[in-house]
Length: 125
Image 1 (cartoon, rainbow, N blue to C red):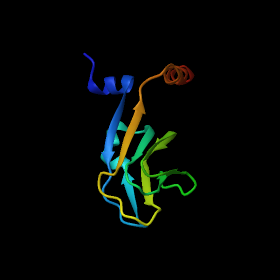
Image 2: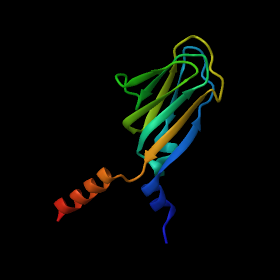
Image 3: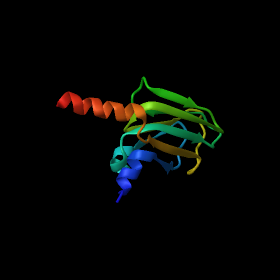
């Protein structure tokens, strides 16, 4: 019998997170380890900015690793080992709850990840 964890590992998983309200010139930090510990690490995040505000998204709260997401657009941030996100409002207007939606993605097993696992086991022997 195949367990849910095995299915998630093979096929991957996508989870939605709806952000709360963010006031003008403020920020929100989203700790993904606390809420989604069993699914980590995430490989990518899709940021859907349905507000009219420009936002800055910091990956793992690293000041050097950020993406700008304009209002009414979406952006994919990938090739990351995602632990936290910091969303900062940059256009001096309030963002209503639900205007920013994140889709967290963990990809399933690919030929590359399977080959890396096998190589690790062979090195161990």
